[in-house]
Length: 465
Ligand code: NI
Image (cartoon, rainbow, N blue to C red):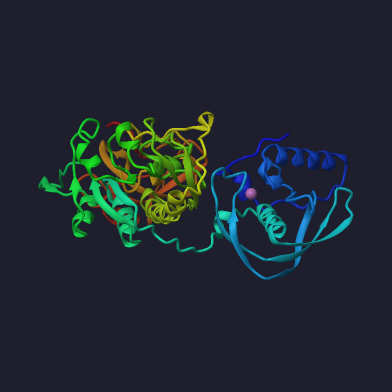
């Protein structure tokens, strides 16, 4: 038997290679794929899901159509369209509506290399299309059909959250027509240079809609007011305090949380930062039940969001907050209906994304350029990363990967649009978005016309002077 790989994983995004050798090994592999599919209780399995880069899939939806092996499959005819829910062994607990052809004709090979033509319709056709997508690196969540789930009107919702990420989610929940009977947010804090006391972003949204707000200093002991709101469902998003079991157990539909990662990966306070710092190609949002252990509750739904090469925490944050609100609005109706099956997290695969400590902001140019590149965008716009230039702090918001070798930290080229710094690998970094001490943030060109004039080749950044 094979082990099924789960998102995020590069192989699930790979366009697979055609099979050219029809030997015994191929037959054995296909048998093992069938065993794996039956063991995992699936109706289809594609080679990339078991870490094999080959255009091979197996499908077995019912006794009537029987087991089918597909090698180098191609859809040669397709008719009709149908929307129905799908799931995937590589995304346990995730389901969503996808539009597929109602009937298809597929040409493929069997394990001996013989040409096979298969006509399929309905669920059988759907399963085949899902597996062929896998061979092209496509997941069903890339194709989710727009569904407008009606907001159940008789559910009393209490929303708990604090920052912008949560405020836009609350806004969407209100817009969708939910009966938000109360909002819980952290106490107001002084912000900015003037230390003005300002309402939290979530409180501001609530007040604008005339929704009562409570701001207990310690929700752990001070929750009577919340319970008096008689919630049927509690939604939390970046609230900022541990919520006690007495609160989590109170609503009949439970307390759910919107978390910006594909759990069990990146539990904790900085999942967006850490995914970029680690150079991940995709992340996402998970909605789960809240339990008294950090981000460890059973999962209700997930959505995958790609991380582009130039994404920063800022841009990814925007994408995830939209995707998270969409997912929440898709999840609540079936949750309230009792149509969702919560899926436990695999504790063995849990990883953590702790809040970013001060020392992680420092750029160590002895590290490979690729890693530094990810660190820089994984800290942009906050808390931001920095090095030093002649002993003064130089914040770096973005860099370009360019070729160049030298002693790590050495300025190896002075270009019109930024200085090029050598790293611990052959990938050098051109600093193109930066902020020298005591100055505003500026692009590389502006920097080179000002502070950069004093730079000379061979100077080093990151050294004490
Ligand atoms: Ni699948």
